Structures are given as structure tokens and as C-alpha cells.
Length: 390
Picture 1: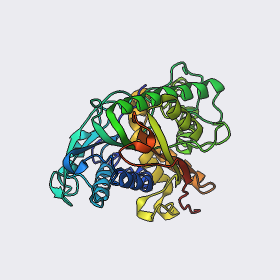
Picture 2 (picture 1 turned 180 degrees about the vertical axis):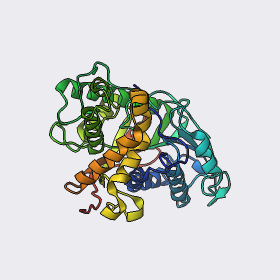
Picture 3 (picture 1 turned 135 degrees about the horizontal axis):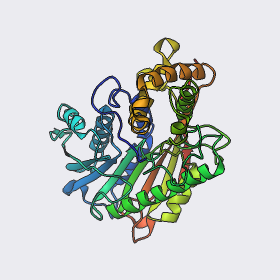
């Protein structure tokens, strides 16, 4: 199974209406994003004449909904603050071909901050770029900047050779056998290397990239469960098998193509592929039930944290569940049970997503200190968001 697109449209179970935690994760990329954009436009002897050319960027794995508008609006706002900002920009919105681009561009047409009207003396032109980012999307040296949030942890496919070895687990879990860990890790390494190589060919020398995604805080995946939302889904499906509502063999053959890499794995892949310099790593801890309406704090019991988590998990998991289990699965029942199970878990433990945010510079043929966007210092800064108990 490959990654399926999120629930489309604007309905009750759509991704557009159930992506609050992703919005929080996006806002955690702002410090790295803002600093990167600022550095790109610092005047140097080798400055690109951005004020005289069209600045081109891509949002990779943009999905569909208001979060996409949020990213573009924020970038335009930050560009408008720069002394040497471009007069015109092109934004390429990338996701898989079945993404709900129709809904996305309808939203664009009603948003004055992201349409082609002049905003802060910057003319913005937006295009769709369907296709997998685990491969080439744009011509050589055509981009100045690339951005992605909450997408790189999705693999191009289920790792080969799993068959039914993961049993009731639906992704890497603390109880998964060693061969499952190895299969997922190897798939991530192949995919992320391909991603970096493709972007390395598309982004011009000295160009930048900011990536935010779900990661792992420990090297040993057996020591800590950092995809708790999916562990709870696995437990829910196991309960349904025990009740005779699903077949055990169907559960044992169901795996989700998602992987949370460690900081070491990220570093190693970047160094081995060689197209980019790693400028900075920031880390944010985002609560499982974080919501932008509550200043990133967890929802209280009266606002049903379990239902909130169930809604956004359903928005991305339902297409995969239906594709695998077919008519035998009642998705409404699954996520009613899931919501209750999640409420029980959150009353005991405030689980969080470990979310690395990395800033990269495309290497040039000249020494790093001579590249057209100035000098950079390699460092790591850890940022932890607030959490609260239920």
C-alpha cells in the first residue's frame, strides 16, 4: 500500500476541517522559517538580484485546506519585511495527484493574501504541482526555496517484506520485531535520500529548504512509543478483532507507511547524500491534542480531547482503512471507540509528538563562506512547547 490522500472536501470528517494539530506543528516551524528567509535576503557581495527576478518556491506535501493558506500568507508577510525582497514570487503547491486541488484553489480564490493581487508590493502567482516528492518535480536549478511540514514522515510505500510479521501493530511499535524496525528504517533512508537528491537538483546553489516532520527523540525505537496516536488506533482495531467485527488476518496484514526518524538518522542521511548543508535543527514537543484555538495547550475534558484526536486521525487514516479492510470495516464505530480510548489514555499520560524542524542550504561549487546568501553557523537549538495535564 502506498500513501493515500487525506479525506477531501469540506465535510465533517475532511482533512480541511480536522487539521488543527498540523496547524500547531506548522507554527513551530516559524522561527526557523523566518530566520532562513531573513538570511536569504541579507545583502552581500554575491547577492542574487531578487528584486529583479521572480523568486520561486515550493510547498511540498501541501495537502488541502486552510493550513496551506497559512503557510503562503506567512511567507509573503516575512518577505515583505525584507529590504531586498523580490517584487514577484511563484509558489508551487505540491501533493499527490489525488489531492483535493480543486478545493484548495477555491480557497485560494477567496483569500486576498494569497491570490495574484499585489500584497505589500509583492506579486504572488500560485500553481499546482501534482506528483510524489520522492522524485523530480521541477527543472534543474529552478527553485530558490522549498518548504514542507508534517509530510516527510510519510513513506513512499509500505516497506517490502513485512507481510504479516508486525501482527497487530500497524506501524513501528515498541513490540514490533527487529525485522520490522529494519524494514521501516531502510525505507525511510531510501526515500529521504531520494527526496534530498531530487531537491538538490531542483534548488539552485545557495538556495534554502525548511522541513518540519514527526520524529523520534530516542535512537532505540523499542524504548519509547512516539506514535501513540497510531498505537491507540492499533489497539482499537485489535479490540474489534476480538469482538469479531474484523478479521485477524486483515489486521495482521495492515501497515501504515509512516516512520518517525531519529535526529541521528536525519543527520546521517543528509551527510551521505551530500547536496545540502544542515544549518540548524530545532525541536518542538506538540501535545497529541494540541489545538491552535487554545494557544497550543491541550483541550480540557469538556472539549473532548479524544474526539478531537479521533477526528484528525480519521482525516488521514480513513482512506487507508477503507482501501485495506473494504466493506468489512465500520469507520464510524472505529473512531467512536478510538475517541473513548484516547480520552482514557490522555487522562493518565500527556503524550506529545517529537517534531524536528531543520534548515538546509543547497551547497554551491564555491566555499560555503562565499555562497550568495552569506555565512551560516551549524548549531542545534531545542524548543519545547508548553503542555498541560488534563
